[in-house]
Length: 195
Length: 95
Image (cartoon, rainbow over all chains, first blue to last red; front, side, top):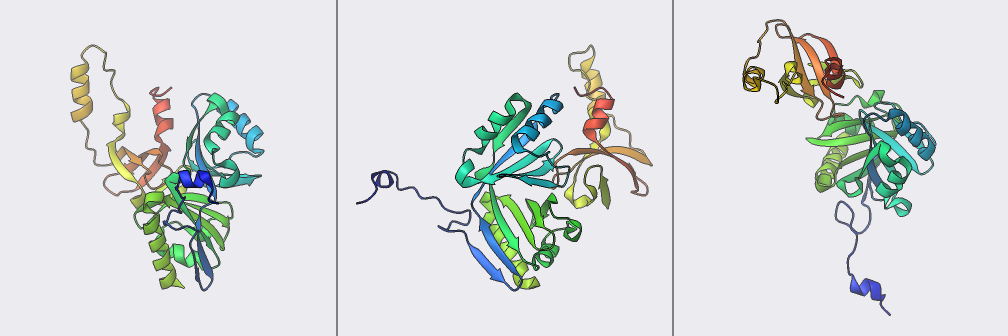
């Protein structure tokens, strides 16, 4: 028998590229995978409460928020520096779908938090081919970005966030969800050309 | 042209957007006596130096911070880059 809830609401989640399942493309030395299992929120320190904010961050995450151009990981959370006094927080979507209120409970009035999950579409690039693909796409000196490095950059006129999970072989790039297909096209075109 | 970002290190100037003279930081008090005249000067009277010039740049394709860049308009040499927030606070502009 059909599930009555499903029958009542025939809504179906789709990925940023519009598919049912994350898209995966393979090249010699590189796989590009749509990232669909991540909840995102931005975390900004409010003015005049730096001690309270950083104490809350340490208590909540169990690690210090990363310095400029760096990311830090511990437990379910990864924090990515995106600007002065501002970080993006990643967590597994399955357990942290409501990431903004979860963070708000940990920070109270010391931080401003905005959910970003569906504002961004991410792609994971795994393999040694990633460096030569990004060399075509971005003016960031990726060879110098260490494991845990992170930076905003421009790819095909799109503002993106690039995170280095493991230097030389594992990267994540986030772009605006509404232009995810353009970002994916740029990644595919560069991969075909470079690999 | 390379801008040596105080937090992120050397970055290509194409990541940045130029706003103008850093004197924009010194916005007059709108409620003061003679505010119309001071705002006229603030908006329209700019020096156009041949030499060192302080200007506001926005790191639009980066960390989105505002910078005060000291640039020589004759040689394009950049001698100093500061966060605009620090400059503004030093001038007593921001809380």
